[in-house]
Amino acid sequence: MNGPERSGGPGVGDDWRDQRARAVAHHGAELNRRREAEAARAQELIAEFIAAAQRANLTPEPLRARSYSGRSYRTPLRGWYLNPARTIAISEEGEYYSLLVPSSARALIAGADPSPSAPRLIVGEGARDGESMPLADLLQRLLKGSG
Image (cartoon, rainbow, N blue to C red; front, side, top):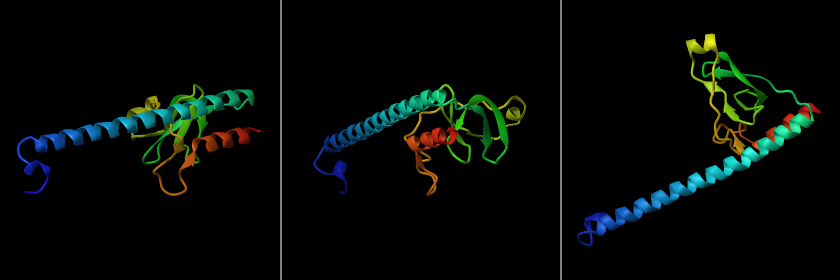
């Protein structure tokens, strides 16, 4: 008779499962709320960077996507790379992109068309040591490099 579903008679296990389901749903909702707040703050930083880049005449460059095997594909995007590996960038419209894409014969001919994703305050978070950096620092480096 281990676990709450086997002790205490009928309905006790159901109560425990209901409480557990509510707790999981609450934690999931809280995680989503934090991610949305992080993305909103990161988007503010990007908007501030775009305005500062325009004032500093920091010219966006054509952005290229790269496959996991290292092949490079053109994209319709222009913007600024955030990392030395040139796999994360922001477009001149202020959208955040991961420029790592699957290998594709079609992309060799037509180019890759990556989709924007929600920006993060820590770029590369969860990557190997030394590969994550605060978004604010990366944007500041881009601006300082223009001056």
